[in-house]
Amino acid sequence: MYGMHVHQAVKDAGEVQSGITIHYVNEKYDDGAVIFQASCPISIQDTPDDIRMKVQQLEHEHFPVVIENVVRESA
Image 1 (cartoon, rainbow, N blue to C red):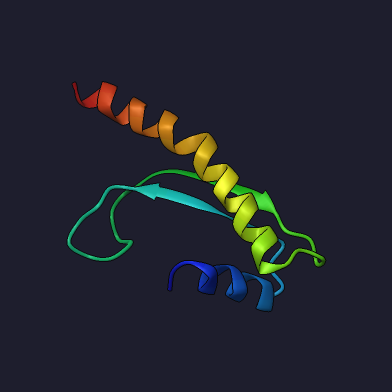
Image 2 (tube, helix red, strand yellow):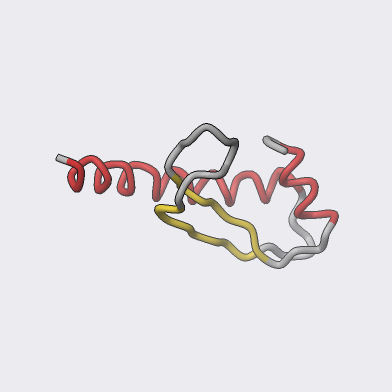
């Protein structure tokens, strides 16, 4: 599952949180070792698009820092 399907499923399930997982890539989809996770609150009034924007904010905030740290650690 990907894209808006994920956010719609979060909404349909009545979840109170969503978030991101940054992980290493391997030969299986979404199966690599977890590097970092972050979450955000979801309210009952949030639409799937609201959830998308909250998750995207987490991505913009955390991906550059986490990737930079991984590159530094492997150098």
